[in-house]
Image (tube, rainbow, N blue to C red; front, top):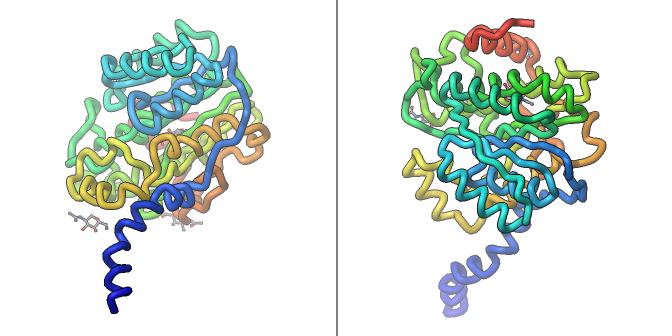
Length: 316
Ligand SMILES: *[C@@H]1O[C@H](CO)[C@@H](O)[C@H](O)[C@H]1NC(C)=O
Ligand SMILES: *[C@@H]1O[C@H](CO)[C@@H](O)[C@H](O)[C@H]1NC(C)=O
Ligand SMILES: *[C@@H]1O[C@H](CO)[C@@H](O)[C@H](O)[C@H]1NC(C)=O
């Protein structure tokens, strides 16, 4: 009886002590590639915090010239300096990119295309999660607008450069949350009904559908595309939900650090011989299953066309 009581009292303490091991177990995937990147150019969106920052740091560590594409340039500059100091790589640059405004996306792309000869790695990492209903500058629902349409436009505008620089790679940070996502073509902007959690899931499903469609279209071009689930990571994504913040704190010692969360993006960006798996979805540095919705080619093609239409891009 006393023993049981003692155990109960000790349990939280034991769990706390074991947390690093448990966290390690839960975050098994580690990018073990030793590829170095001198002379390579990478763009990481949302690179001033969390997984994006860790991804950018690792790419810089390996010698790439890395563009941090951030909405908040001041914050970005601080991070750039931090990465420069840590890696000794001076070629970490900050450029303004607001994915909720197509004007900003076009301006970013124009400047980038004018200043850089190459682009070898594009990491579409930025994202919003569970915002209250709101719209982008162009009138798109915020999740669909930033997570999907914003990156869709960015990828489109940089695609020629990626092709010229082949072999090159595009990595899209999606999520396990895509399993709850549906593409409601009659309510793409959430005007008929809206649920902030589900809106996030829908946009993450869109990321996977696009990765597949893009990979199909890019076959033979030397540009390959991957989508990843980074794992459950501490990040600023939960800033819009007090419940999520509370849960995060409660379970925080089981949750991946941003550095662990960056591993699968890095794995897809760097691993040699991964080209044959273009279009696939990865989690913990392994191939991962996606929902039936995410495998539906009809939906993927229609979403591609609808997105081109919304963004005023030529349909090809
Ligand atoms: C990434 O996702 C965006 C938005 O869904 C899409 O437009 C883009 O084509 C995707 N890129 C890749 C490589 O999957
Ligand atoms: C949003 O959807 C989730 C998942 O289906 C559900 O649990 C939640 O209650 C919904 N929220 C609202 C406000 O309807
Ligand atoms: C793809 O989705 C469409 C529309 O939701 C559906 O009618 C069709 O049966 C799906 N196809 C497959 C192979 O699941």
